[in-house]
Image 1 (cartoon, rainbow, N blue to C red):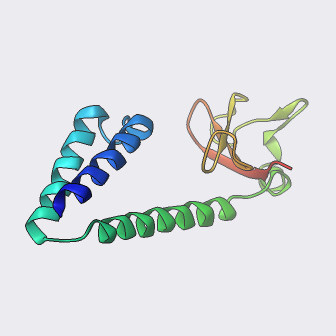
Image 2 (cartoon, helix red, strand yellow):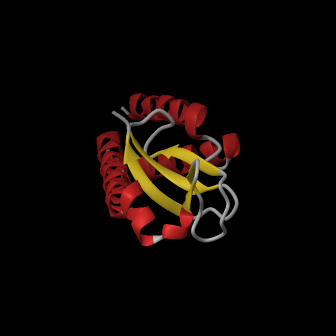
Length: 132
């Protein structure tokens, strides 16, 4: 009975480790998290579905938090209105340090339509925008 759940958990963490291993400590971190998860499943006699459901809830709540933070950022026109010294002849500068080196980042992925700019020098989050 436990073999199927443990094997499914192992495959899930292999998939997670392939894409997200730098975020959770590399391969060693994936092995530790996998071992803890299998131990919890065996110790508490829990079904794998509950862990999957908890993972979905955690992912959805983190997505909602990111979306709320993104929506609170000003748009380009609001940013320039609040910081008129940031407007350059060709682009926008950081209001914190004055640097014109900006990073264009996606909210969820590198190619996502919900995007925001951060300063390369000081890391200040500046404004948001949508790609059409």
